[in-house]
Image (cartoon, rainbow, N blue to C red):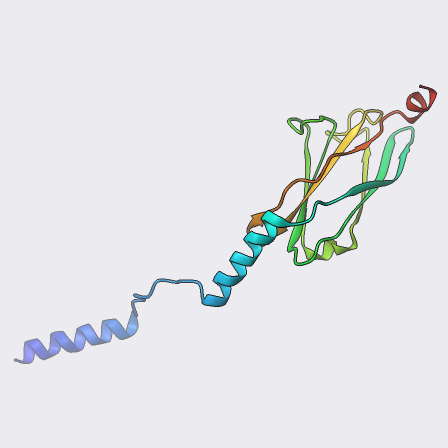
Length: 154
């Protein structure tokens, strides 16, 4: 009988020292509702509009600023800038949180940067909102014109 009691006490001490969690972590009701709302927002959001504020090309550097329409309840934005129309190569990705609510970004590149080896080419910009873990649709592509002197003479 003493051996049985010693075994039970030992098992009790082990359980107290190393507790075992049996409950699976499940999201609460409010988190499920918020995930559903984010999914609906991602599917039904208004389209984002992009406009180019300024576009300057210097001897060794290029800068342009773009603005977009801000959406309510976003947790962030994803931006893609590329010299390729279809965004298949040389894509520069930017991700930002809700503090990007100012809805303006400046993009600068110099000849020393890898993706900006040719500063006189067109750059294409698109943005999509992020709602929690769900991504919205990409905006229409905005074009930042390349060599400004060539485009004005045509």
